[in-house]
Amino acid sequence: MTNTGNERRGGTAVLVAAAITMGLSAGVFYIFACAVMPALARSDDRTYVAVMRNINTVIQNPVFFLCFMGAPVLTALAGWRLRGSAGARWVWAALLSYALVLLITMAFSIPLNNALAQAGAPASLREHFEGPWVAWNVVRAVGSTVALGCLCRALLVYGRPGRSRQPTTSHAHTSSTANSHS
Image 1 (cartoon, rainbow, N blue to C red):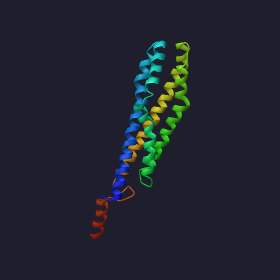
Image 2: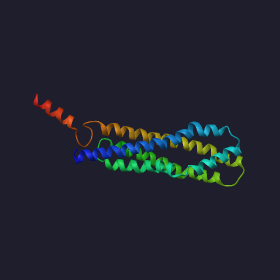
Image 3: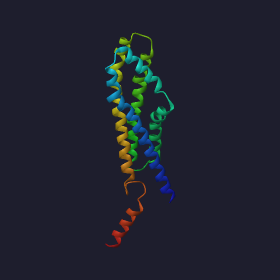
Image 4: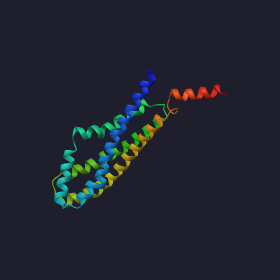
């Protein structure tokens, strides 16, 4: 295999890893939006606050952070590796979408989590937390899903023969065969 083939394979591997970590992150936001938060909405205030505090503590672990922060790092690396290729713009769109997810997390979700961790009456804590946190989580679910879709599109475009920086052997062979029959 030529060096170009190794470079292409490496670009594909990073792009696949970015898509996997992005998918896992999108899945976390999705499952909160469609299952965790609706289930907690059925709970009394004390249970709601206790469970969300536990979730906010437990989720801070290396496995979660590997995907949550690995997604933008791998997406940026994929963008750099695919620079100049047909799929690069999709990778950069994915990174932009997920950067907005990270911004929302830092600007809204984490401060809401921190406020919920403070002492106070469960009903009051829940009242200030639940509506905004659920709404911003839906935005994060949509943003990370858009990012995943962009990475999937990049995989399709980058893997399409004749659309990358270097033409594939079969594409070059087809062109030379067509020219010889003219």
